[in-house]
Amino acid sequence: MARSPKSLPSLDPLFCPRSVAVVGASRSATSIGREILANLMDFEFQGPVYPVNPKTNVVHSMKCWPSVQAIPDPVDLAILVVPADRILAAVDDCGRKRVKALVVITAGFKEIGEKGAALEAQLLERVRRYKMRMVGPNCMGIINSSAGVRLNASFARARPLPGTVGFITQSGALGEVILAHARDIGLGLGRFVSIGNKSDVSANDLLLHWEDDPEVRLILMYLESFGDPRAFGEIARRISRKKPILVVKSGRTAAGARAAFSHTGALGGLDVAVDTLLDQCGVIRGRSMEDLFTLAPAFATQPIPRGKRVVILTNAGGPGILATDAVISGGLELGELSKATVARLRKALPAECSVQNPVDLIASADAERYRVALEALRRDRNVDAFLVIFVSPVLINAMEVAQAIIDTAAKLDRPLLTCFMGKH
Image (cartoon, rainbow, N blue to C red):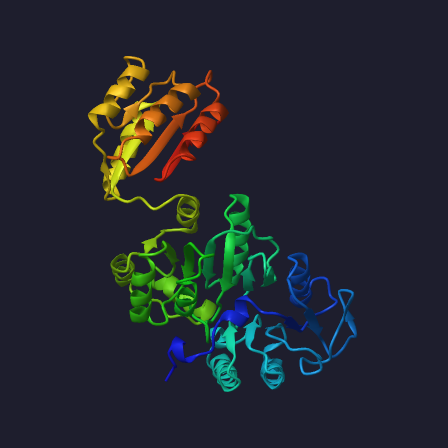
């Protein structure tokens, strides 16, 4: 019977190790072992790094050790990149050295069938015996971008930006895309974990570890399965009251669930049950990774609205109507502007403008018109969130409009989201 997370050692050595060994470090420019070593150095890990390879004395201009036990100083975390048939010996070496945590990059376990599952069971038994924690096997690695740690124990090519997002992915290859796209859109990741087969450390363990972590304010997840749906529901229901959780769950179809099993040995559940579970515990489900990356910057940079009342500010009627439909369909409502707000808008805006919600500034609206309208709206406490739409006319400077919106957003204690439409 699996032990509860409370009875297992802490995950701190995984995310805040004082020293790291790379078992399977290599001179080969195309090897994963060399890539992980290079990432640790390039990301400026704040502690000693020890390459381990019995066949060479130097890797990446660093002294290389024949085994973990040969390293003279303590080792908190070991990254294992050796072939599957050598993994148990590597774990024994780490266990005798009293290494506290492992990241097992190596594949060839339960995702390949019965023989691999038996090997994975032996791997987990050794991890438990030596009282270690393990991410993987069959994973891409982990990242902690905190200034005092700077750990990039992965073979990802994309260099993550520091931030307040914790990201859990069950797909290593998708992790590369996640890191690259997050960087492209300026989304900072405080923690990143590719859990692979999640033989030991699961998504539930990570949620518990991040529950009270002030450096993780938003949790994003790509999952192919729930190891323990009931436990996930209990944990997520509690955490989602403190910080948002956004999930993309694959395996919506029977064929997709079968593909997930062949990928990480993960058994998917009925999709309607997944929807129900996530809805009951306050988790937001994205239908795609595109959905996730549309939502994530908003949750990462904006406060959570205190209520459902939204005001729409636009310079075009059609988009304002579409936005209204989207707001109502999403379970929100249009806020009723106060008489004082309507009076301020009427005084400041041309007569042709609509001063009811949605507020239509008409096509001639420039940066100054957006500025005065937002100044009037931000004083209205009947508004919990702002949605600002700008369709770019030829003669209006879009950058100036954007700056006016940014200037007002800096004064708000409520979320403000924008939609800029047009080629320029």
